[in-house]
Length: 57
Length: 425
Image 1 (tube, rainbow over the protein chains, first blue to last red):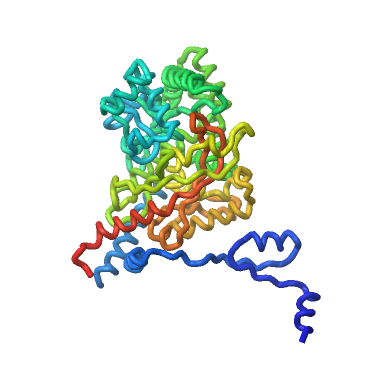
Image 2: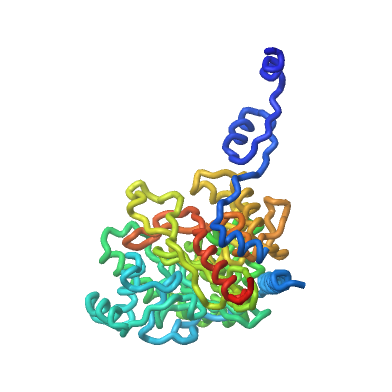
């Protein structure tokens, strides 16, 4: 039961960082390989602006 | 094709027209003249300011004191109280620099005798002007000291530096600003907050012509001493060039591209090519940055101010942050952040400037032509590199800020109302 968790701790870390760069920067500074995914939560727009953008974009 | 698809197609075509105007622009510095001669619609009793239009009662302190200084300097009033009375009565007219073919850094105060750099976009014929004024530093002890020093500088610019530069620039036959900008980007400038390379290059261009001009030796000596120490001087010329470019790109029907980004220390204002001269405003943001002395703190500063965001308008400054990572020191940033900011700007622009390359990004072209649709869709607004003004006047720091999203939302609603008839479903 604990084997996978132990393996995780003993193996080299492979990290995917989604969003905030701060976490990736911190790991990179400790020589951990990080794949960075540029993402942020979608902006919540007023419904009227959503409709306008759907028409214009 | 349905109406919406047709409109989208018209927008894409119009935006490519604006982008091409940015790309094809060939700004040349051709003259220096007093504002009364250089600017359309300028009068002896008009005082121009940076940013969107603003009532006297809402003006921030540096602009108010600058306007009063200019009124006294131009002989429009004999005392501060008389100047204020004339402004309130409308006998002294206040107007944005932008509405008279000009731009002004920081408070942007420009009056009839202000010496202006004049730059023509040879591709379109549009002319942009910018005051030469750099302003005293903010370390002067009192408002009176500051005002006296400002008036002394204004007089010197109008009577000494202006005529020397006028003679040199006219003798040169015109100085190619695009060439200087492209080179400066290769040398660590982003041409808004960092102008060390462009100012040196500009001085090299001016120097031989200034020496040949038959100016009196004292004026020449003082002017060259000033230019040698004025690391940000080229910004005046770059801003005039950017203004000419932006004005050439204005008024293209159906275009959603921003042609003005500007601030008056109270409001941030934008204009959009397809919406003509209409301003869309929102409260100006505070500037995140470094103050040059420990004697100041955030309470001493005013929010974002100046017409210098004309540089971001045409795809320089914050848009090419990766070209000048050294500026990240003002905001505790990093090289990676500088790169990220330029990549962010690519998400809200519709193209790039092939003549302006960023060495740190494998010579990728500068992202340009900011689209209000992409700004609202992503929530990412232009990053603005800027100086920080003391509320009593003077530059006391530098850093970065963002254009407020609300300007873009207002512009988008207005665009829809303008181009989609109310009768359409």
